[in-house]
Image (cartoon, rainbow, N blue to C red; front, top):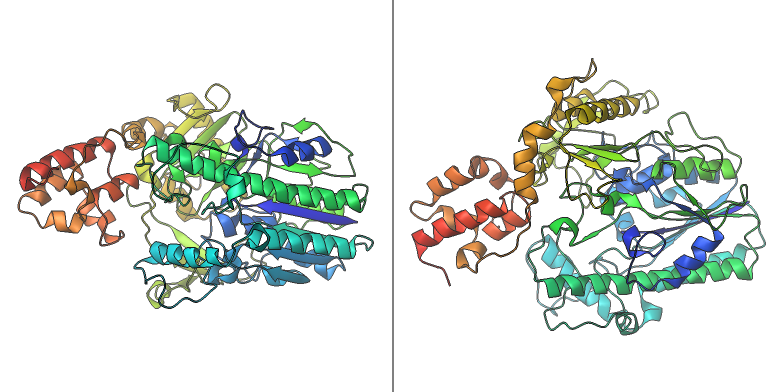
Length: 581
């Protein structure tokens, strides 16, 4: 028995013709669809990148207990279980987050592994003086990315290509052997959207603006032409990913692997390219473009190909499916099930630690925000106190307490640590409810108390099923020891703010005030009362967590200021400063 998992990062299903009307050229996905089963209701669970990979290993949600972090000592790891049972597991990837503090325990679960450097500002090649140093994490990553690209002048040298080379080499070397799993994991089409010119040439368009293939995690403030350019850059990278998919399919054809090889092609989440007025992910509600994922599976046990499945499935189902394929049983802590032998779930839970907690029954989706601005209490449960790129600080660890063993921690007492505040706050977006059948693009939030009550109770049940801590219920304004009632509804109470925050940032007048750091604006005589009138609480809460150089436009792009308040603030401050131009 053999298995191949080909995993992309940030692959949008609405850019594939199997799911939507699209301009993207991806013929190998059509070829894949003809040889496999397409899942039409496949959802993400824990997000973003490493939380999704933790699900891939463990078959259970983790976002209710933990932010971005390593595999825990009590986690079941599907690749390790296979390795321990005599199945050779191999990881080939160019995903840079495996090299960081928050991903350091994943690759060592495999029998063998190899990595290829250079993606997304990976600190790879050292150029000390050229180009000049940059201030801030994002600027430093962008500088490093420019350096890295100079070391990939051809497609053959691109890290995606080298990763696929390694995966195909593994297949060529081991095609005649038995009992192996290849996880071929590509960072693309994650931003930045770096491809070589012949892929860009597939998407001709008029554009004379700045280089723009790395959108920030914020609201769209760019002109339509620039947005369209970014979409074309993304499409070019999807076409490159499609070629990589084709190379894997070619290898399966060449070695006649279809009779005894499980093939799964998936992604961790999507990426907003201007939809809902937003770029990227994580900082806004988890709209369907981000969580409703493309997923294809060829399973020789069923022999199903060329068709589709409509039942609800999620990333948590991959580990049990692969284990059962190799004759192993999933552990009791795994929440997913074997996609070949069981029907889908009655509902799917998804979210990010500290963000909305979301549930869908396949038709409706309920996005529960925090009950108040504090977005608290929020806790981390871990024995591996690291963030994405750093260890927990001494200050963060000062107040940790041992908690009683959780049902999935194998009797171990984990550390309970108050979560550090971040700029991301679901409260500002409000609690949302959508009908995915009648409003698939989620343009019209519902206000239906009876429906919210049903979905709220479903959410609470799924949270209890996942052993969510009491603090998560408190943060969301839900009772822990009883069933939620009408007094716990939030959609109507938060609707006005949700509508205001969702307003896109367009038709803004040009003003120097927009691009002046807020801390400088607050120093202007008469400015602070204007802020306190229009944005009460901003000067004493969110400003604590934002960069010192953040401007009004930055705050609005992060939804800390509504478009309406931004326009009013700009006019009032312009009147104080006379700086309109």
